Length: 166
Image (cartoon, rainbow, N blue to C red):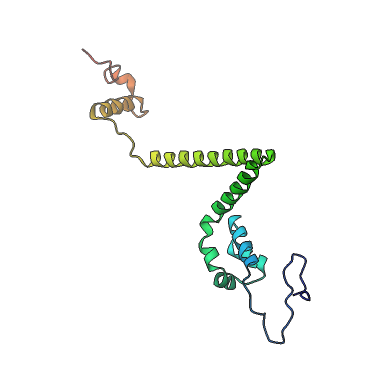
């Protein structure tokens, strides 16, 4: 392993082995961790494959379990950050205490925003209240007077709601 060369980013340089084509990909734990981190940042399969210097089919073949858990990777990263901050705060690190407070505030804001959005979606889905028969008739009469197609000076106050004879 001492004679192996690495590129600028620490990836091993693949030397030709005398056979045609690219050498077979080896899925290392470091690459698995890299895929998990990139998924937690919201990267697409195309970008992740390019970062690992592999094709998308190779990415799907070797890193299927990591890709399958794409939706939870961000939550796992946030949970890991919380745990590190909590451990350092318990040791008395004041900077970690401040960071933990910021992370908690950010999490509370996300929860509140999510709940507010959910409540708005539910209220938008509710059927609007329809007025009763009398209220609808009164509204229709008011709209008929306000309509430009009806000449109100011909009828005077006879058709205005609430101004009829008693």
